[in-house]
Image 1 (cartoon, helix red, strand yellow):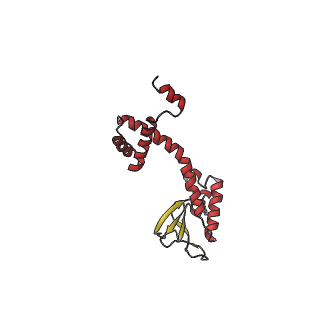
Image 2 (cartoon, rainbow, N blue to C red):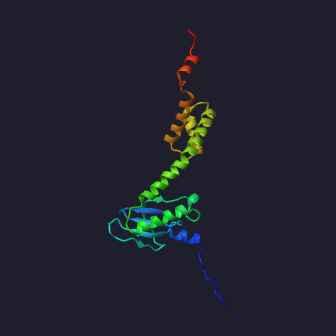
Image 3 (cartoon, rainbow, N blue to C red):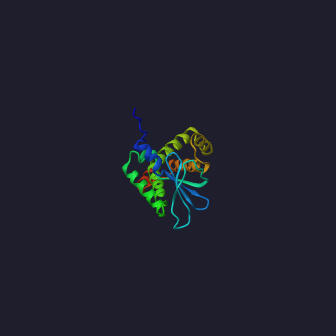
Amino acid sequence: MRRRRFDLSSADRQRRELPYGVWTLADGGQVLFDRDYFPIWQRSPDAGVAAIRVAAWRWVDWTQQNHFFDDDNAPFHDDATKKTCARILADFITGKPIDQYWRAHEARRRASDTPIAADWIHTLAKQVLALSANDIARAVEILREFTDMSFDGAFLAIDAVAAIDEAPPRNAASRIKDSEPL
């Protein structure tokens, strides 16, 4: 009788071996974690100290958490992300800084979200302002009920829509056309 050998798929191995993000500790140390949020490597804030492998069951009390990729560009199906994660791991183990990787990911995420989110918020704010009969305070309340926006964010969105709707004409020709005859 032949035993079947248990073999993790390539995606499963990558999920457990490649870094998904980094936790920063109170003392400035860093811990890389995998896609399942298990720690994989740790290094101290002291320069010249090598990174060490961490037991997956170990609890990590972190103060900051940053990510290197999202599900839409996971290394399991995106070769560029796979190469980036391998570089992150190599840089981490050799003591090089890795902040630029998560900062680049955050910038890409914000850039890709901003136009869609801005258009969506503008459209929603316009509808809410109309529903509230141009009562800005009520519009802010409604917008906050249906989104996770802060008061300031909702107010700015409603205020921007109100300002656009009340904006004066932008060019001299339209000002002359709209003015009363002499």
